[in-house]
Image 1: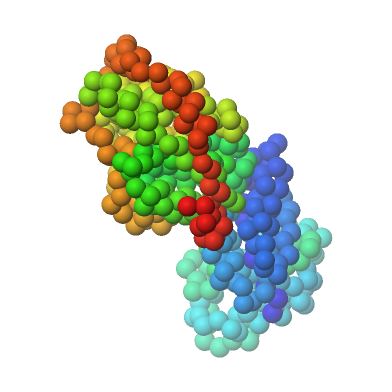
Image 2: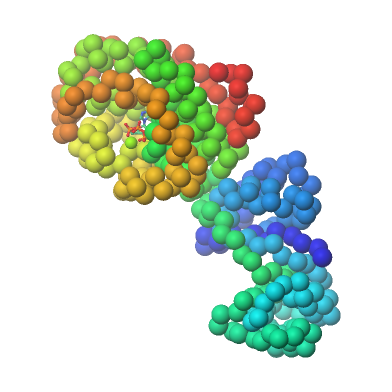
Length: 394
Ligand code: ATP
Ligand code: MG
């Protein structure tokens, strides 16, 4: 029997004017992700279908499970939209299944097809009852629910529907720049931003020798996990050592984190203009640490006019950890390598910083030239979910 994967767009289908653009982006994503497999892909306004080789089904399912914009999908059997062909296909499928109760649910989008859905349900149900022993119809809670979709280009019959990850296809929004640390929160923030269609570049601030190469590798591994949800992610590695050392030499201790984060945001803004980023994305969560109180966010945020998207702002740590496990970043995030934020933590960081004090403290050193230098010496690593492509860049 001939099978295809039948994809439903879900939330996509609420878009009116943009609908075609969304579908086209999803189509290109699917095509790109399945490069290397012997597939043919077709799209229309309601569905996408993928013809595949049986051996590749599990691989293809794993890939599809990481494509935003796919709401649900099924593995469907196909035949012509012609009465006798449908009848024999439905019976053939039913004969292969073990069940005591069943229901047939027909959807007829091809209005040329001469039999009404309800009538056809009864006809198909009758054929199954006549040919298979000891079974009966249960319309409320059947063991086997056979869905029959009659369309102009063919009829699709299926009984299992899998959930995709939903959201919008990556690339339907322009780029955002993700502040990616080695922690638990920022990969989750990146995942959630991509779920809304945002394409990402990632930025990692490192302070070698205070932070290790292992810490950088950890961030690359996290980035690789995220890149499975898109095509590739450019990871910009910023050498933050000089700025950080100057902060700790010049700035009063309780303001060090506030100023450090203002410097990060300044660099992020510069990188956004360099790489056409329309927003900064990070893993800040309200109240999680001193620099993430609303007062702190205010003082830190005031160095940029760009929107700062904080997808996990209102989630509990436990909720963030659940998502991290789901996207398989958790085990990497809890590896123990120090990050530049954790190396120089003051004993009592200010919880309610004042903007005037922050400006006064940071003006004690020439941070603008240091920011220029950090950006000029930046390294960019192209990260994909295929390991080999960047291993020699380390
Ligand atoms: P996470 O919040 O991801 O668990 P963390 O606890 O190290 O990591 P915080 O101190 O909570 O990070 O910082 C808040 C956010 O600032 C992070 O989620 C991340 O987006 C950003 N950030 C912190 N440190 C770095 C860094 N070294 N490079 C890039 N971004 C960083
Ligand atoms: Mg955090």
